[in-house]
Length: 358
Image 1 (cartoon, rainbow, N blue to C red):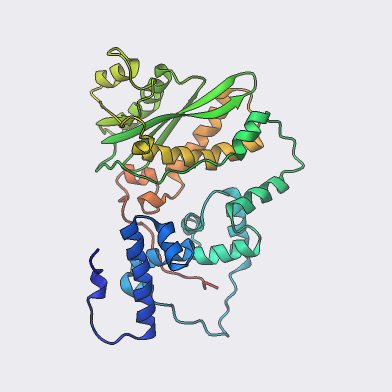
Image 2 (image 1 turned 180 degrees about the vertical axis):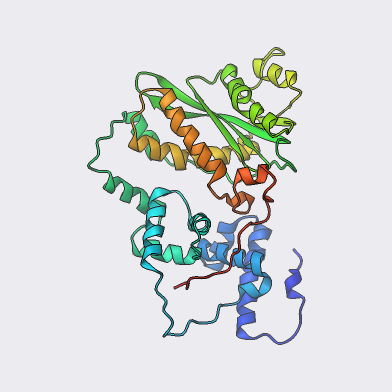
């Protein structure tokens, strides 16, 4: 790996410049290894600091890697109490969110505070990790009567891997959609419930349909009732759909799913056999919706019908598509990207720090 362009300048280095070069070397190492965790392990630092340096380098260049000037002791360093309370409330409202996403949410509310400050505030409130926040929620809801089956209890406690691989790319909305089906859990008196999910690989706009089976008809239903009407309304063509080789997506020459795609002039792309991470885009969404929606919702509510669960899922999808900032699209929201109001590689808000960071 060649030297970073920012290192070409010659001349004497002061202490701040040496520190900045060291931090840049960590960013370079992570890029070379393709693994942030391994780079941090080798250099003995935490990932929160790594992502803060990466953010500062992306927004301010090499100068952003230098230490900020110290705040004079007489400077009022205390974050306003109202902001502290809002950070705690938001962390419990979205216990699966990391500090970077909480920072983006707060900025949408007009509150500018860094991810590092957020982490410090949460640590002081014993809410520093996702586990801490889940336990705090359990304690807060301990007196509420929540009826769930043993299998549901096991399900919501189970950790689910969140695939970060993005093996597919597209240059415009609708060019390539990624579809998948995964088991959500059991509803008492109904049986197994599956989520048929579709995600746009350009701007992360997502659709979800719950059904009691993995049959092709259910996979077609989400396309026919939700996905294609959405793109027709925006006057956008759907070019292709990427799926795995599950029986709900492919099979005989007259397979319902493939016939439906063919009738609508949509290309069907399939992943290689036994390589589920090739469809990592929608797999990542599956991990997100499990962690942010199903665990929390099924912890609080006992659902007697699929329709009731679908209604809450629809409300969460509105939040996911129109309100929730997404790291993968530069902290923008999917609807903004699909409407042409934001670029998936460029943040639409200023990153200037207003509040003190300690």
